[in-house]
Length: 121
Ligand SMILES: [Mg+2]
Image 1 (spheres, rainbow, N blue to C red):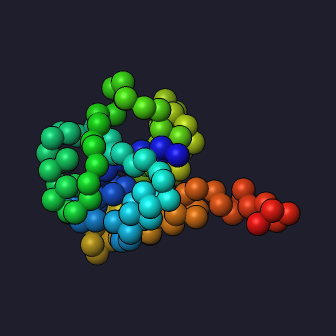
Image 2 (cartoon, rainbow, N blue to C red):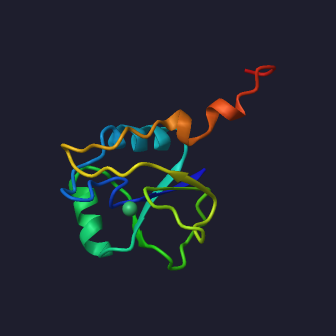
């Protein structure tokens, strides 16, 4: 599963660039479960990559709307747009430390609840 995260308002606070509560743990858990996680932005890619990596989150940052080396299965975004590939997972924006967004839960993101098969699980 390939998952693309938007940066401003999704991973970072739109005002203060703080990290969304729990986002590091969510990304870590996704990777531990075999997901490929990347990031994209319509802002300055190099600058956001430095901020992301500086915050302790590894990963590549791409520019929105430009050809990607892979097609995401899920795009997580505080303002999803129709052209985005895969399933769109809309989140309420993370504004700042004092106006935090909610944590993004792995189970919710991966749709475990809907896909659960009670005959098999
Ligand atoms: Mg955003």
